[in-house]
Amino acid sequence: MYMNYILKWKLKEKFGKSGYQDALENTFLLALDGDVEFEPEAVLSLMRRMNKSKIVGAACGRIHPIGSGPMVWYQQFEYAISHWLQKATEHVIGCVLCSPGCFSLFRGSAIINSGILKTYTSLPSEAKHHIQYDQGEDRWLCTLLLKKGWKIEYCAESDSYTFAPEGFYEFSISVEDGLLPQWLTF
Image 1 (tube, rainbow, N blue to C red):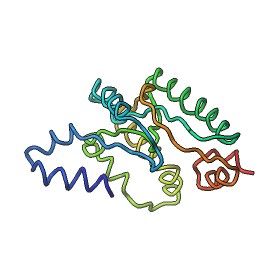
Image 2 (image 1 turned 45 degrees about the vertical axis):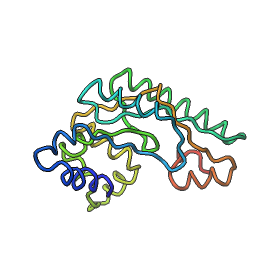
Image 3 (image 1 turned 90 degrees about the vertical axis):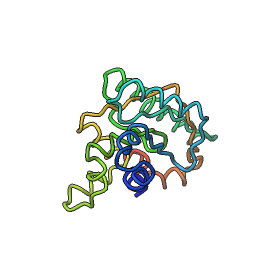
């Protein structure tokens, strides 16, 4: 909804048809979770990463779970393996598969010009769409970017901090909501 509003309506209203394409090329959307903390330099690092190549459609930073207690320690370990190591490895190989919605920057022209937004906002019409679309909106958007030839990059110098569930109850609710791996269900 917000992407449509910003990329299709607001930019056209402000820049008109003649300046619309240039505006798209210079528009970046920052995706955040409500509890994420970051410094402005973290966003600038993502911008520098994206400005290195016009085929980079998204970039993500390094997310640090914060809090205290054994559940947070576990999540810090989980992030170190499944996010920092995996994203760094994918970046070196040349294909980061998902730019997490909790702290990522997306290129406006990548989302609009490739027809990605139209597909991304379409309603499911088949059973497989429910699985495909609901596995995570960030993963679905990144899959569409990759299918259209855009690159996704990881920027380890761009740090952000998210509050991790500190108690078992909060942690188990996160698992039920699909925020954590299913093998952790009890």
